[in-house]
Length: 191
Image (cartoon, rainbow, N blue to C red; front, side, top):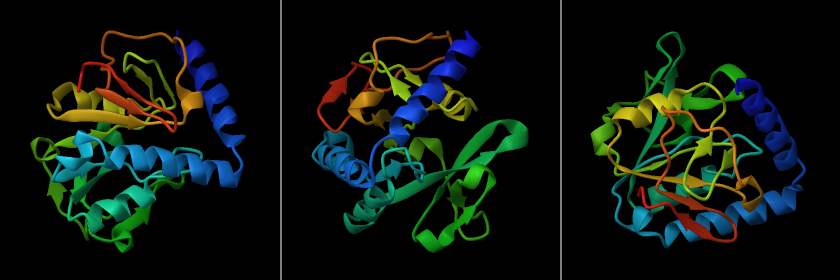
């Protein structure tokens, strides 16, 4: 099963990397626009969101929009030895630091921790999705572990090409409540 997931992750990353820069920008913009009209966005005072790295849908513009809308932005900081993550409040991109794999995370020296119960809407990253809300993550299991105790609303942002018919689902996998793509919104009933 793990080999299937590994192959699917590579296949999906390769497909996403085929998007041209203009396509990537336009599709990311369409996804963000749909998010901004969603109750999960409109009703949330605190948003949990990952700082994206291409070829994932762009979240930098979403973070800027959250600040403009007066929302509190919480971004994850991974704790590799514990395979856990904590969210920290981001008030400026200058509070980010580059960590392993070229990911951007909040600097613990410049940011304060945000408890999971303070995050009303959590934007959950992934590589592939099914319409029922199950997602295939990047393989570290950080979000799976976080979602086990997270009680707020969840949404994933994806290019339409990332929504596929099926992949192996395990007992610990938690579906997201909604998937917003550049073409439509899939509500799984878990929102």
